[in-house]
Length: 320
Image 1 (spheres, rainbow, N blue to C red):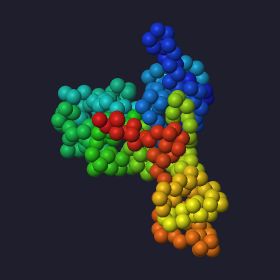
Image 2: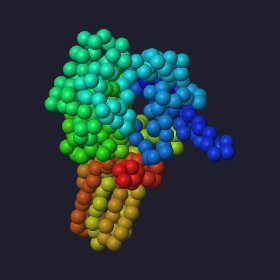
Image 3: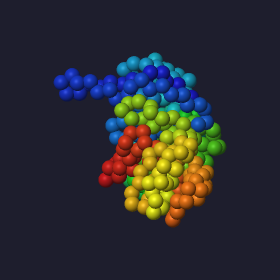
Image 4: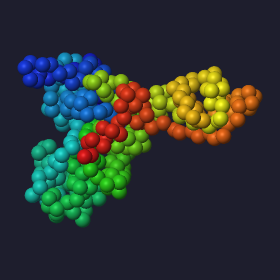
């Protein structure tokens, strides 16, 4: 559904200074996948999304989206994709049903087909009670559901969502995602999204692509990234931390050991197994253990491991 090779975008700013926003990105996304693209502000993910949706042209490289080249056939790409940007896409003075109907006509549907499609989307996204209401009178969650409906008017096989739930409260976020996932399951859509909500990427996406400094630095399932790149964190208490640290160093895959007072912290690939092995070793060595705690990694741990920065800090900056 998406195929890129060495996709690059450079901008010229100031006195001819070149900014390399996207640097040789090569990715493949198969039909039906739900992929989350993560990265800090300025990492290049928005530029990448804008290229894939034909809003800007690449400097070099190649990309086909929904079966068409973004450089040579951008109009064909647009007919095959839906795009829900960060801003609201509907006219404030328009009524919900009229806006969907008009959008259908813009995409070439005849009046009957446009009216039918508008009715289908109103039902699918639970907008029935709002069909005659002006967009300016809708709540934030209702507007985002309408934005998604507008992106689906032409029944695209590929849907781009650029931070679709930013600014929504937890209830509206959950409600929006319930509708998106139901529509995806019903129509087999491919979905590519950017988000600063790590729980969305963790629980919704089948793949997570992390972008930093214009490059893809990680691409895998959320669970695989957490296991391989972050690992479980194990905290063990003991009055003899020095000896305990030597025992922990012998554990397979143990890393990032740090001790403070009577507490030892380390990263392992499998906390339950490592904790059992360390407890047995401590018993045999006569080292008392006062406490054991394990913590599963998060995507923020992955991001911190890869970049030295926390994605949560970026998220809080965006929400201010």
